[in-house]
Length: 348
Image (cartoon, rainbow, N blue to C red; front, side):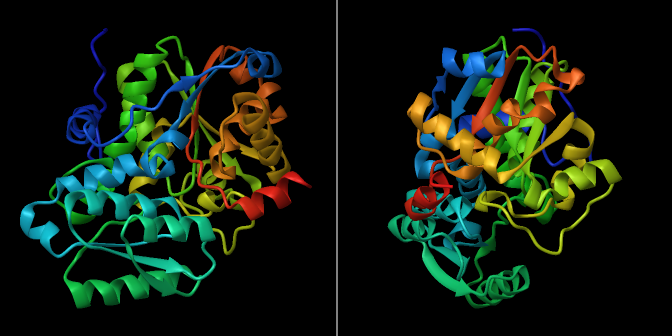
């Protein structure tokens, strides 16, 4: 393997060294998820597609990598009082499972509008559910109250360094642990399919794409990293165009896992290392979900299917900047779909 081009910047919460450390820390707990291919989908896309199936990860989504890294990065004193987070979906379940494996409590603030299937996962994995209103303010206020009552450690859904990397400042450390955990996806993917020249990743809070981009561009500086985002929650695309973080007053998309806003720690990586953001409509996401079910025979949630929607979209296929993207890795980020919503959406 060629020497890695380690990307070190104090503005970033992670680097390739910390991502490799995370891989060693979590390898015995996570699944090394498979990469699937389909000649039918290659033909539709006009290029080779390599699907990294994080829908087969423990907990049903990529989030378990970062949560596992964060939980097992805590020292014994920190871990003893447990962990707190607020999440409407896969992060909540992932943190519950990681905490269960370490034998510590997990206090999970969940908004009342969260998908039923994802709430059931939290309970299944032993998380202690505390309800909040659907607003971000209510989620954060409820989490703050829990922190005061329990003395537990807050692990933010995406703006957390352990999910990206461990550094002295608590907030940056929080961001790093999760992104470092998510970055292990690139380590696996580029080992499984080294011919990949482009990776397409869903974007929401930015933890997943931050880790993927930092690792991938350290291994191969020429690789392209593209984000896929729903038009009804396109704050990242607007932020990229404006050169500063744009926060939307509200979001409206079937992709419930992509409704969060970029964090200040993940924004620096998105700004500097993500080559472009491809915006797609919900109808394109639904079509991609159908293709995943019918051709790949893989159950994905809307957020997980958006990478395929992006590579099949006119915004990608007709853009001359991407005509040389011949071998594309697509992260199928999760498979925790609410079946009732699925049947309704597929009938549209």
